[in-house]
Image 1 (cartoon, rainbow, N blue to C red):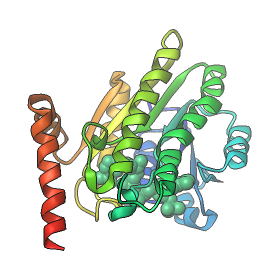
Image 2: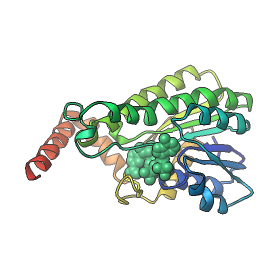
Image 3: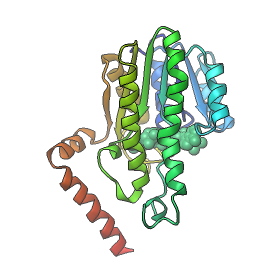
Length: 251
Ligand SMILES: NC(=O)c1ccc[n+]([C@@H]2O[C@H](COP(=O)([O-])OP(=O)(O)OC[C@H]3O[C@@H](n4cnc5c(N)ncnc54)[C@H](OP(=O)(O)O)[C@@H]3O)[C@@H](O)[C@H]2O)c1
């Protein structure tokens, strides 16, 4: 899948990794980019990057009416990038037993798994009608093991990884490349601004998609993490458990 000439819709493109995708797509010759965000105002600077090629659209991924409206307006899309996501709180609210209820877990699952699935359902037929293209779901290395400070986040990304595999299987006989991106450490608000530059992340993902990769790894230390998980998944789990309890003991 080449970015050149593609018509791409990116969710959560007002900042962070989503904005990095928009910039990388413009660099690589995308024909049009639907830059979408919950707040229209947050897209003003994004649109100014290239007013001819960027079409701003309001899209809260959790709002069914806005999803439908986006699919009606962006009829020429050939590439959907499901990027918008939430990390969940880093306190008891994101734990399964200590949370007062599972409302936050539901919101994280909705935003990171169910809403991207709904967007796949809306845009796969559009991409097919336009002759084929790609669906790229931004997952996380948090799908490989539980990060117990934000269990709901790991749950949602692991579920989204399976959702991505299911969509890929259903579309296997057609001309749509369905990829999951196992991202680690990109410098955004979510990561406390630590890690890889979001535009560099965007470029790596576009290059992997151009090769036809279905499992894409990008971000600081991602290969090392993959090797650790492959070599000894229980050791990786144990290290996270110890970190959780060390922090609790300190608090
Ligand atoms: N940064 C990392 O190291 C890292 C690592 C692994 C995976 N990821 C994944 O990368 C993706 C982007 O994260 P990021 O690091 O760029 O985080 P970020 O800077 O916090 O940006 C998150 C983006 O998602 C948007 N968003 C959240 N809820 C939304 C909703 N209901 N509808 C539409 N947009 C919504 C935010 O919009 P608002 O501005 O309106 O809040 C923002 O644009 C996420 O899926 C995240 O899980 C990031």
